[in-house]
Length: 214
Picture (cartoon, rainbow, N blue to C red):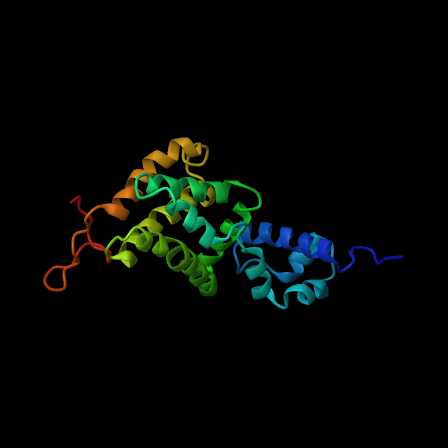
């Protein structure tokens, strides 16, 4: 007879632990989530969690694995050309966030980034180096780092207002409502002329500098 409250250490148990971890990291963030709490809600002994994932950091890394390959996503977004790219980016992120199991990993990463530097670094790497900068470079735009950061500011802002702060009507709006509006802003960041950052005299109001239409 198997011990009460334990599941066999197979792939089903690992998946059950990951499901509970995603929910915990998404709801509470990295700092407030404990291995023991995840084990308890998954109905397993804490030793099984460390057996599969080694540590809390290892569990977090597994929990925030994305349900798509970023390189494939970048290629698909670029395949339709420059026109409408901003809107396609918004739609793509909404598909990942709104879908199951995509929203769990993204929310876990977003909440973790607020209080955990490793999580923040992972989110920066994913958004800037892996997805957005390759997109900017793929369309041949100048200042790829600056443009990618501007796009990231809108993408992260959308995630915060829609899923964490739950501002209405953003939270309940359909992708068809949000994508054209926010996509126009992203398109501006991607393709319009950016005012050069001053190297002397009064500095721009933000570290990224003001953005002006060409």
